[in-house]
Image (tube, rainbow, N blue to C red; front, side, top):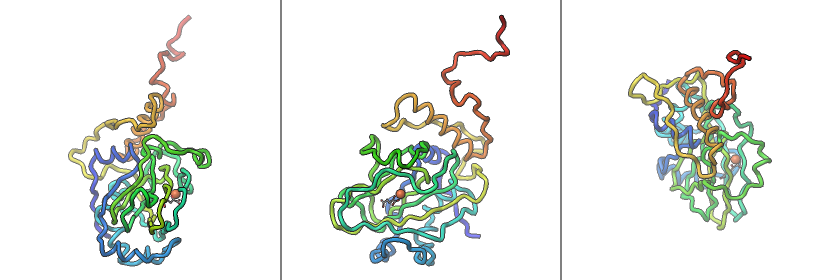
Length: 263
Ligand SMILES: O=C(O)CCC(=O)C(=O)O
Ligand SMILES: [Fe+2]
């Protein structure tokens, strides 16, 4: 079996849990980026199965290293890919999450965006909302949102790969020019139970260290985010999380159980 080495440590895994994506700038070789210049838009399954695409993108040590860190050993590589190619100017897509997005707190599917050319703001970059993978919503319910505080436009150099939690909210941003802007979308999937087998210094599992609030998050929602982040951390570490019978309300509860109440 191919020996893919994990590249992330505890702190980077915690960052991913908070943001829902990992950005690897300009990792793919220029020569391969150039080979993608004539790719047609739409389904490119045959191309996804070529040894070149496998070697230069799917199994690139940095991209595959993130997949290995977050999805464990023997993860699965999708044998299909889609080329999201835009040429004419357009007003941008609406916010959405793709297909059958996950609804749990686990990390089982990384959806990846590979950009074979530079992407500037005028080129219609993909936009993502950091942290939104923890907000499972009806796709139609977010479609009318405009700009959201904290949104990130992925303006990136050629050869960039972004690995995202499948549930992250995203959209193709407005495009102001008629330049070719391609994004090759592919996925990695989990194929083994979660385990803390990324880069670790000690066997002792550290508690989740909270990350900053995202700019669109107000106080109460930030408690929920922290609870979700902790759960995801425990899950990824293979620790059985205790069922939260109070659904997080304990944070605010000043109360006693019935069994302790006397008249
Ligand atoms: O091309 C992009 O930047 C995003 C495309 C996308 O998310 C989609 O079509 O589902
Ligand atoms: Fe999408």
